[in-house]
Image 1 (cartoon, rainbow, N blue to C red):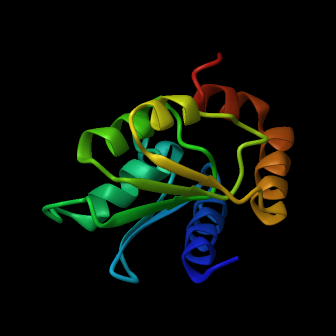
Image 2 (cartoon, rainbow, N blue to C red):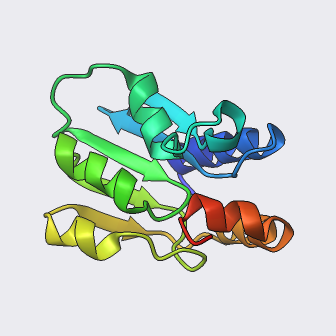
Length: 144
């Protein structure tokens, strides 16, 4: 696992420790993290504050996104994939997609390179959360 995915995983763990959904993300440009975030839907009572959105908000206005890479511990959903496409982020690296397949096809269809690392640490963390909090997870993915 590279240092950027480690940072995303640390964000996910922070979100879980806060009582939220353990998904984390970081935005990287020129080998440096310029934004980081985690799913804050529960903590902030905000239905759209997914990890990738929190990360982009925390990065602030960065101008061009063509030289960035978004790292996320879980395959982005359509909301977050839409933000990736909207801002022209060319590459997304994900920790896993077994627990949630997300919007991979949407990203690829819009020219985004998707790299799925299928990391046990990411998979196991989400699997535990889904098992322990099925109602909260279903709310997060819109399946209530």
